[in-house]
Amino acid sequence: MSETTTAADPEDHRAGWFELFFDLVFVVTVSVLARALHGDPDAADFGTFVVLFFPAWWAWANLMVTVNVFGSARPGVQAMLLCAMPGLGLMAAAAPEGLGDRAWAYALGAAWVRLVFFVIWYDRARRGDDPVPLWRPLAYGLLPALLWAVSAALPGSGRFVLWGVAIALEVVLLAVRTGLTDEFYGRLSTEHLVERISLFVVIVLGESVFTVVATLADHFTTASAGAALAGFVVVAELAMVFFAWGTTSAARGLDRAQAGGSTRAIRDTVMYLPFVLVAGITVIAAALGTAVAEPDHHLPSGSCWALCGGVLAFYTANAAIALRYGDGGRVVLRWYAPCLVLTLGVLLPAALLLPAWAAVTCAAGVVFLLAKISRRRLRVRGLLGAAG
Image 1: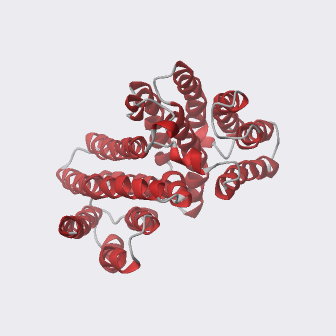
Image 2: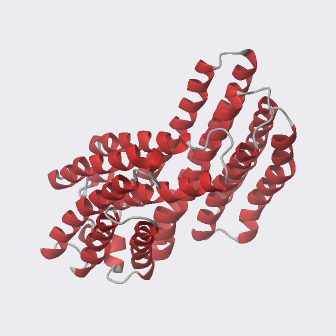
């Protein structure tokens, strides 16, 4: 990016300690939401998880972009992050009954966070400091905040209708891109975006390790230890795939999308698709915790779908990101097709038929093979790039 389009100093394009401190609240959010997926979750449990996790993710993503544009070292941005933390904490605390008795508190937390990032965007737009029209923070920040706040006072299904309207308004406004110029997208630091999303994935992976170890501490048997070891291999291999291949591809892809003015690719791979990836890791962690708790029993059907669906969600998100960054369909299928075959043809039958410890061991073998395929692809692309 040129000096004329850079919003913050170069040192602001690295994640600051304020951002890392801010992310601590998401350790709690992910942990609380994942609890409902332990054991034998049904379709309603998975649906509740998505409904409650997406608004929190969306708030985090919007705050991340705000920091990216304005710089993390500025006092106003630091104050914004501190002010947003209690709102996110309220959402996390309300999550166990987020669609029940505590739905009003969850809604107030969501309104709180949106009001916080509205204030800084509105102030900058009012002063003409940024290439965003004045109406946009009103429609994208203040109006959804009001909808969330009003929903807290409504009884019954009317509350959730307003939730849907508020989220849809934000998603649609981002999709149509009205008021977001090429200059705005040109001011984004791709390095910071990759780093922040990577740190968020670290949080979710850390929650997975915590789940495995904490469950082993409560069920300290040989069989549980074997399931825990296999579960750790699953998490470690997913981490290797993401950080050895995913972050490299993301950095290259975002730079290419920004240079080519492909704003939709930036939007999709920063705001939408990472949610699928982190949701996949979260449901995998819940299934691993269930397996460690009862390693000699068959996994409940809900945990079977969580384990297999989580692996599919992780690789599907990576495949979609690769396609948005310009990788050809044939190139992506070379590593995504084995994922479909191994997950549906090997892992799913194993999860349904074998004891939990064996099912997790099979999952470790599947993700190990998929990691090998991904790393081989990365080496081949590196050699081709060097030859070119």
